[in-house]
Amino acid sequence: MNTLTSLLACASAAMLLVACGGGSSSSSSDDSGSGATPGEAADTYVGNWRTECKEDYAAGENPAFPDGKSQFTGLVLAKTGATALNFAQNTAEYETPDCSGARTALFTSRGTVTLDGTKRTGNVEVDKATFSTTSGPVVIGKVLLWVNNGLLYKGTQAPRDAQGYPNQVEANEPWSPI
Image 1 (cartoon, rainbow, N blue to C red):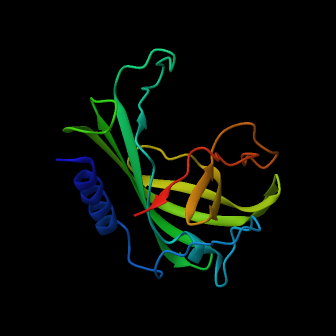
Image 2: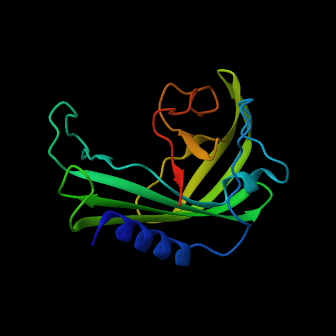
Image 3: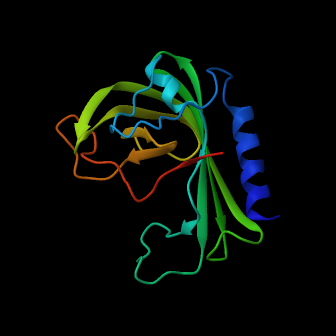
């Protein structure tokens, strides 16, 4: 199975796992830095998203010594309220460095996302969100979310503020709509 077929299969499976809701994916092409679009806060994030293929490091592995494995992650977000979404996240792993060939593992997590307000980071206003896992591997709790030019950006890394939210988004790791 090629990467695109695997991705579509993962996204289709994830969509079946998430309760129906919301509309179509909304993406802002606003260059002002605001992730906000008209409507309710959750509308901005509804849709199917994926990361690019990247090297995979198991817990405890040293990134300076890559093992030749790769992975990509798909995320389906379905609106359940003005500031609430359900999510299904699939991470597919491969024995090759370019996400080709047979998939060797698939990890699926499901749960809820609550948008907890906004925060300024750099020169942009981003949404604070809490991911709560209901099944599967634990997905990071408090994150930042921002959609800009049709791409989803997440902030998951330290340092964190007093409320436990990251202080920045990972600008070099956007999620693309699928």
